[in-house]
Image (cartoon, rainbow, N blue to C red):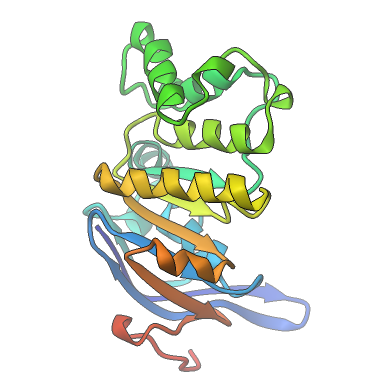
Length: 231
C-alpha cells in the first residue's frame, strides 16, 4: 500500500543544508495500523506529509496505493490526494465558519465522488459513526476538543480513502479523550483502512500492529532496512 524507497528530504537554512529525512526505506501493507514514534523535530510530520503528497522528497521514490506520486503533476496530485489519503491533524484544522456537517462535506465538494444530493446524508452517517451526529449543525467553536477531533476524523473519511494519516491526533487532548480517539483510529483499521499515525506517545505500541521509531530523520526499526547513514 505504501512504499518509500531511499527517501531524503533536505532544506537550505542560513546554517547550511538540513536533513529532515535521511535515506528512509519503509513498506506498509494494506490494512496495517502503524505508529511512527519520535520526539518533536525528529521528522515525523515530514514523513507523513511525503506519504500524503503534501510535500515532495528531495530524492527517492514514493509509491502509494499503486501511484508513484512524485511523478504526478500538481493537478493530478491534488486529485489523487483527495481520493486516496484522509488527514487528521493535532489542531483539527476545521474551518471555523462552517458547521461540523459542512466541514465533513467539504472534501466531497472538492473531489465529487458522490452526487451533491447524497453528500449531507454521507456526512451525517460519518458523524454518527464517530459519535457526534447531534453536533452536526454547530460551528467548531461550540464543540469540545474531543468533538472537534471526531469531526476531523469524519472529514478525513469523507471520500472513503483507503489510507488515513494522523499527525499527533491526540496531542491537544486530555488522556481520556485521547484514548477514545485512538480507539476510533483502531476501528478504522478493523474496517479495512491503512492507518499511519505519528505521535510522541510510546503507548501507541499497545494498539498498533507495528511501531517504528524515528530520530534525526532516520528510522530506527531494523525490520525496515533502515540505517543512520549520512546521505
